[in-house]
Amino acid sequence: MEINIKTLPDSTVAELVGRLDTPASLEIAPAFESLYEKASGTVVIDCSKLEYISSSGLRLFLTLRKSASDKGGRVIVRSICPEIRNVFMMTGFLNLFQIED
Amino acid sequence: MDIERLDPHCQAIIGQYREMLPVLTRMSEIIPVQIRSFFEEAGIIVAAMEQRVKTEESLAGKLELKGAKYRDLFDLTDILGLRVITFYIDDVDKVASVLERLFDIDWDNSVDKRKAHEIDSFGYLSLHYICRIPESAYYSPEHPEINKIRFEVQMRTVLQHAWANMNHDTGYKSGVEVPKKYLRNLSRLAGMLELIDEQFSTIRSELTEYRRKIQNLVASGDLGEVPLDGDSYRSYLKLNPFGALTRRIAAVNQAEVHENSMMPWLSVFKGLGFKTLGDIDSLIKNYGDAAYQIACYQIGLTDLDIISASIAPQNLCIAFIMKNGGGKAGIKYMFDIINGESEANETIAEMLMEQAGDLPFMNQ
Image 1: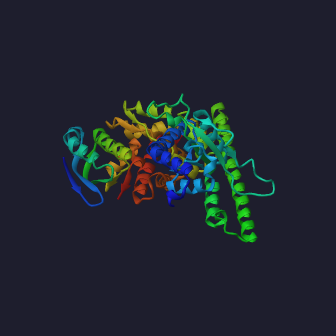
Image 2: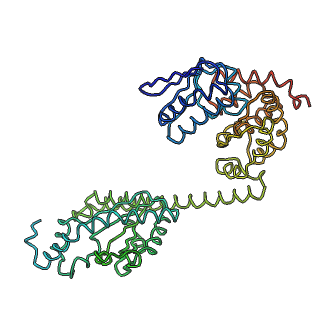
Image 3: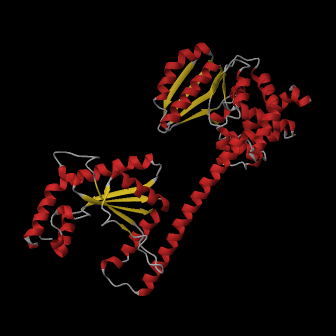
C-alpha cells in the first residue's frame, strides 16, 4: 500500500495505491495524520489506484472528514472504482463525502 | 477650537477631561464587552454596537455654548456614548431591561423618544438611557470616579439606525433649512420603516409560535397533522426516529455507528412526495423490515464493522422506491438528490435493482 501526497497551490492531493485493508491502514495512518494539518483547506483523496477498502480504511477517511469539518475545510474523494463506491453505499457513507468522478 | 477662548470654568472642565481620558477610553472598551455577554445570556442577538468618547473639540464646542450649565465633567451625560443596534424592535426593550439590571439608570435624563412621538408624525424613534456603573458591580479605589461617570446608551433597530443616519445626512440636523416637501418625504420613509420594523417583529413572533406548536404536535405524536418542513423535521429528529432501525442494522455485523446529521434526507423525503411527518413515520413502520433486509443482503456477508447512521433513511428510501415501482430511475433520483447528480448513481441504482429480485420483501 502506498500513499503519495502532493501539495498543490489550491489543495493537497493524497493518492492511494493498492489495497487499504487493516494492516495497510495501520501502515499509512501516520501519513494520513499529516493530512489533518492540511484539513483547513481542500484535501483530495485520489482513489483511482485504490483496489479495496476495509472498515479500518473507512475510519481513516472519516477521521480526515471530521478534521476538515472542524477546521472549515473539505475532503473530496476522487475517482473511486465501482466496488469501493459500493462499499461507501452499503455502509451509508456515500452522502458524507464529496465524491468526484 | 482654541481652548484659550473658553472661560476658566470651562477650561477647568477640559482639564478634568484630559485627566480622565485614559479612564474613559478604557471604559469605552470594557463596557461593550461586558454587556455583550449579558445580551448573549439573555438570548438577544445584537446587530452592532458602537462606542465613542466625546472628542475634546466636540466637548469644547458644547462648553462654549452652555458651559455654565455644568459644574464639572461628571455633570455631562454624554461624555461616553454607546449605541446598541438590534435587528428587532422588541429586542430594544429587552436590551433596555438588561441595562436596567446592570447599571444605575438616571431616569430624569433618560428619554424614550418612541413615547414622545406625536400621533401625526413619524421619525427618530430611539430609546436613550443615561447610565452609571454601580459600586456593587465594580469599584476601584484607584479610580472611584468611574462610578461617578455617566454615559449614554442609545438603543435602536437597524432600520431606525439607517433612518437616523440618512436623515442626518440630508442636513436637517445641521440647521440648514430643508424644503417642506423633502421633510414630508423623510417622514413618509420613517413611517414606512416603522411599519417594516413592526412587521419583522410580528413575523418573528408568529414563527416562534409556529415552531412551538409544531414541537407540541411532534411531542404528542400527532405526526400526520404536521407539515414536513425544515423546522418540523428538525423537531422530529430529536425523537431519534431512525435510531431503532440503525441499531438493528448495526447488529448485523456488530458494527460501530458513525452518527451524522439526518437533515440532508429532508430533500429526499420531499422529493419522494412526502407531505407530513406522519408520512416518514409510516415509512419507518411499513418499510423498516425491508430496509433491514437490504442491509443484511449487502453487508451481512462482509466484515464491514462500521456504518453511518444514514444507512437507515437510505435503505428505507430504497425499499420504498423498489416496492412502489420507482425502479432504477427512482433510485438514481434519490442518490442524485443526496449525493449530487452523477453517472455513477445510475450504476449503483442498476446494481440495487439487480439485487431486488433476491430480497424477500420484493416477493411478498
